[in-house]
Image (cartoon, rainbow, N blue to C red; front, side, top):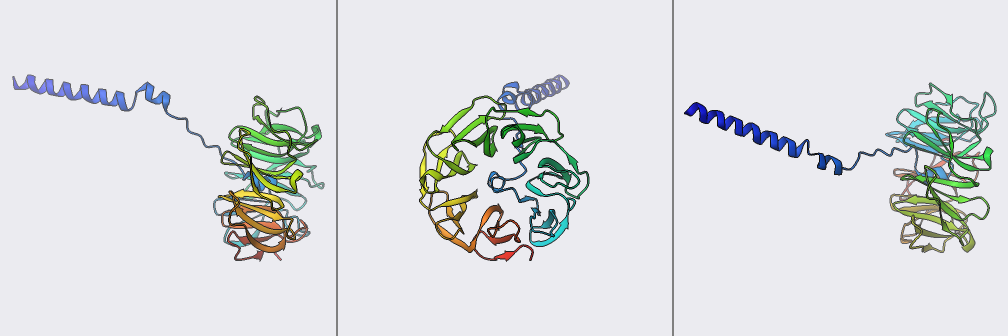
Length: 329
C-alpha cells in the first residue's frame, strides 16, 4: 500500500513538473508574442555623419580622420590619452568613418594607390584593407551589415550595399543629400529645393515630410527630426518623423547641427560661428567655445570640431565647455 502511494506521488510530481515546464518554457503562444532580439548596430551617429564623419568611437578607442597636411589620414587613439596610431595608408583621404566590431568603413578620396571617393574597409589594427564599391560615395551610414550611401556617380541617388560588397541596390530615383538612416527608414533632403523626405530602406513607403521649408543639417533622434531652416535665417526647428508637430526651437542661426544626449551642438552664425549648445527644447543656450567652428562631432563627453578650415588641426572641448585643447598641434 505504501509502495503504491509512493508511486502515485512520484507520478503526480512528474506530471506537475511537465506542466510547469510546458507553460513556462515551451508555451508556443508566449514564444510567439516575445519581441525579437534586435541589435541595430551602427557605425557612427547621424549627427557625426552629417558633419563629415571625421570622428568615431568604439569602446575606449576613438578613430580620427585627419585632413591636416602631413598627418596620418586615419588613426586611432585612446579616448583619454590622445596619441596617433596610424591605421590607413598615407595616400588615403578619409571621411565618413564608421566603426562596427573590428572593422572601419570609410570614404577614400585619395588618388594615389586607388580611392576616387569609393567605400573602403580596414580592420581596426590596420590590416585587411579592401575596396567595397566603385561608386563616388558620400553620407555613408553603416547599420548592421548594410552600408547606405549617396551615389554621386548616379545623380546622387540613394544606394545600399552589404558590408562584404554584395547585393548593391538603388533605393530611390532622384538626387538626395544629408542622409540619415534610422530604424529602417532613410531620411534626407532632395538636391533641387532641399525639402525633407523619407523612404524605407527597402525602397517602399516614400513620403515627403516638408514641402515649404528649405532645410539643412538634419538629425533624426528619438522620433524627432532636428534641422536648420535656411528659408528662415537658419533658425532651428524640429518635426516628428511622421511629419507632425513642427516646432520652432530657436531663432539662433544654427549650422553644423549635432544632436546628442538631449543637447543640440551647433555653429552659431549669428555670433561669429562660435560653438554653442542648447537643450533640444531650446533652453539653456550656452557658448562653449569662442572659436569659429565647423564639422562638429560629439563622442561621449567631448565635442570635436574644425576651427573653420579642415586643413587646420582639429580641436576638442568638453561638453560643459571646459578642457579645450588642440587634438594635435
